[in-house]
Structure formats: structure tokens, C-alpha cells
Image (cartoon, rainbow, N blue to C red; front, side, top):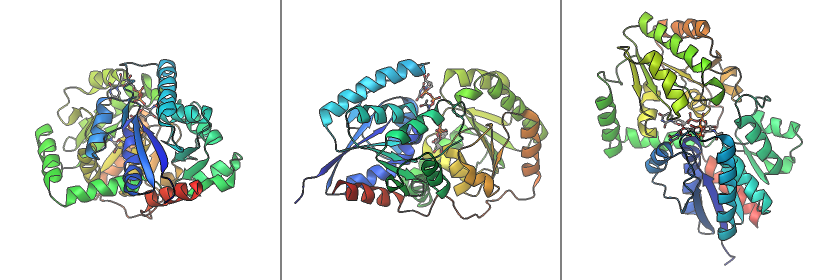
Length: 380
Ligand code: UD1
Ligand code: UDP
């Protein structure tokens, strides 16, 4: 038997953990792979929630989060700690996801040690390094050093090729978010203990039944929106809540204190606005699946909205997820209060805001299997 290959996967935040969970399941299922999961701990509570829903137990915990961390201190601490962990584990491949500081530091540390980097969710671009900040830069930088690039859509493939990335290193894979959503949605719809937990948690949080109420689900956290952007979006939500008193506006507030301060100042105390702590993924998926409208500056939630056929207003100047704009489910509204009010009102006034069936631009499944097969083939 040929020796096992050692694959070192690094997660650190809520979105990379959720989207790498199916890849980690696939790695763990292969006899010819030794899978090592390293958690940078860039997030704490939000990371715990994501690891726990997928039953993932990191082999290495770097525990770097400091409340209110700056990008430079986070980056410098994490780069050294990941490099030390790589030195000790001496893997054949390092897998990173997307555009976080965790992904950037892990890719850079692996590059310095000349370990091949596998980039999952490669090639998304706004082409403006200030938006999303600093994620657009992180994603572009990882493309310069990745040995294997898994691009979720044809557009992401062409972005990489246009930048001169070696076409032989680029694979159109679909987006693993489809599998994450499927895993959790199926577990909820089976009606077992997870379904009861979700119903119990959500019934405890709300004085309405989320399954039969018209809801708008809101999240905000991008660095470039902190301050005026978040204030403008929250003011628009306060106006919408007053114009649509029967609609419930649910806002799980990101734990970044610079986000929560303004959200709570503007939206606390409104009777049909529900400010809650970040929700575990299963509870969040249940709400997403029942929402009439989503308002968000999140990357992953744009993909989930499109996958579920939901309308989402994207509170950013630009998106690296154009596929959903092209199929009419996403609208870029920036943080412009008037535009948010107008577009949201239009959707909420429709007689039915049911899911709109679309061809999912992110694929149909078997994405993680494809990714792991390519890594194994590359190793031989
Ligand atoms: C990071 C990612 C962003 C991703 C987001 C997902 C970077 C540069 N940004 O941004 O791409 O969209 O995660 O949510 O990597 N905090 C806690 N507990 C937690 C998580 C965060 O208290 O579990 C607080 C801390 O005060 C922390 C702050 O939130 O300092 C910001 O966290 P950080 O990871 O630096 O940035 P995000 O804005 O979360
Ligand atoms: N999410 C969650 N609970 C919440 C809000 C979001 O589980 O309260 C999930 C969401 O379904 C998506 C991911 O977190 O899968 C997106 O994370 P986030 O918006 O923090 O980061 P981004 O995708 O913008 O990088």
C-alpha cells in the first residue's frame, strides 16, 4: 500500500468552517488520507457554534482571538502560530477556504514552507481591494500561491485565468455551501433531535411562530460598513418595521462590538424587530428557508439565498457573487436607506414571496468528493 497523504485543513471563522465541513467529512472518509484539522480560533463563540453543528473536533487549536483584534495583530500572531503547527505536522497539502485572515495566513505559512496550498472557493472577485476589505486582497493573494484552485463557478474560473493563474491548476468544482446546506436541511427535515432543538430554540427566542410568519432576516458585519453604513441600513430597517407592522424583522447580531453598538442603538425596543445573538447554523438555515426577504452584507448568505431561491438585498457597493445578480435574486443596494426601503417594500408587497426556483449556479452536489479526488490524483 502506498503511504497515506497528510492533509492539513485550516479553519478559523464561522463561514470557512461551515463550508469546509463537507470537505472534512470527505477527507475523513478516505483510507489513503490522514486528515488534520487546525483551528486558528480567529473566531471564538461563532466558530464553536459552527464546529459543533458538524461534530468537528480540531486536532490543533491555536485560540488566537482577542476581542476587538486588529488585522495586523491577528495576522502576525496567526502567521507564526500556523507556521509552527505546520513545522510539527509536516503535511503534504494545506487546504484553506475563501478570503479570511485565517485562509491568507495559512496559505502564506504553507507557501513559506513550500507545502502545496489547496484553495477552496477560489476566483471570486470584485476587482476592488477596498471592497470587501481586506477579503478581496486575501483572495487575490492566495491565488498567487495556490497549487490547486477550486473555483465554484465558470465566472470564478475565468477570473483566475484572466489573472494568469496556470489553467492546469484551476478546477470548476461548484461551491461546497450547497452540501453544507443540504446536510443541515436534511437533518432538520428528518424531524429528529436537531429538528426539535431548532424549534425549541426559535420558539424560545420569538413570540411568533417563525414557520407561519412573514419574516425578514438581516445580517451585517463587513468592516467597510462599520459606522455610517450600518447606521444607514438600521435606520432603513426601523422605517420598514414601522411600514410593515405585521412583518417580523430578525437580526442575529455579529459579535464584533463595533457592529452591535450601532445596531442596538437604532433598533432596540422596536416591537417587531428581534435582535438576537448569532444563531447556530441549523437555526439560521431554518429561518433562511422560511424568510420572505434577506438583507445582508454576508458572502455566504448571498449564496445560500440564491440556492434556496430567496430574494436578498445586498448591502454592499459590489459583490463577488454576480451569479445571483444575473439570475435576479440578488440586488446590490449598497447602504442607501431609500433604496433599501423601496426594494424591500416592493418584495414585501408581493402577494407571495415564496421561493423562486432557479438553476443553482453553485452546482448540484458531489463537490467535496470532486475536490478530494483531485487532491489525491495530484499527489500520485
Ligand atoms: C471575519 C472575516 C470575514 C468574514 C467574517 C465572518 C477577515 C479579515 N474577515 O470578519 O471575511 O466574513 O469573519 O463572520 O478574516 N468576535 C467575537 N466572537 C466571535 C467572533 C468575533 O467576540 O466568535 C468579535 C471579536 O471582538 C473580534 C471581532 O468580532 O475582534 C471581529 O472578528 P474578526 O474575525 O477579526 O473579523 P470579522 O469581522 O468577524
Ligand atoms: N450564519 C449562521 N448564523 C448566523 C448568521 C450566519 O450560522 O447567525 C451562517 C450563514 O448561514 C452562512 C455563514 O454563517 O453559512 C456566513 O457567515 P458570515 O456572514 O459571518 O461570513 P461571510 O460569509 O460574509 O464571510
